[in-house]
Length: 138
Image 1 (tube, one colour):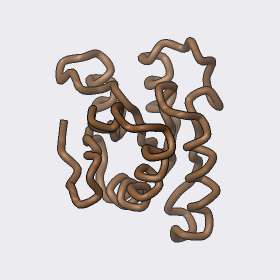
Image 2 (cartoon, helix red, strand yellow; image 1 turned 90 degrees about the horizontal axis):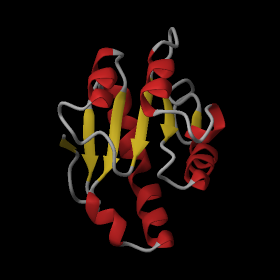
Image 3 (cartoon, helix red, strand yellow; image 1 turned 180 degrees about the horizontal axis):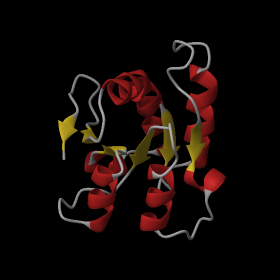
Image 4 (spheres, one colour; image 1 turned 90 degrees about the vertical axis):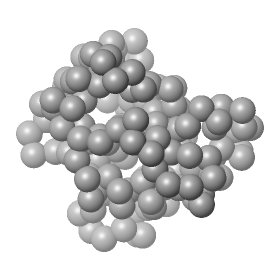
């Protein structure tokens, strides 16, 4: 499973969890962990990069985002479903937190995100703030 962090999330998060997770997960469980701007220009339209990811043969991608993919009938959601991409969106309550508090909480959530992404396909899930919470389908 590969993960791409949307441009609305800190670039450092992708690098940090990629580095932290290298020895934690079973070999082959996690492939690339990148920020959107590592693969595409920052101004690449969402539909363009989503389509490009979805057409990569033999590669599964999960997207980590802050505020996208909540509209059921949105074009991004249609492409996400059609091309077999999964999306994990931070619940809106994350935005009221300070950077380091959010970063620590995200690192705490990361193993659960990876496990869920590897066990499912074509899902759109919301990540609650509370670690005692559960993913909610959006």
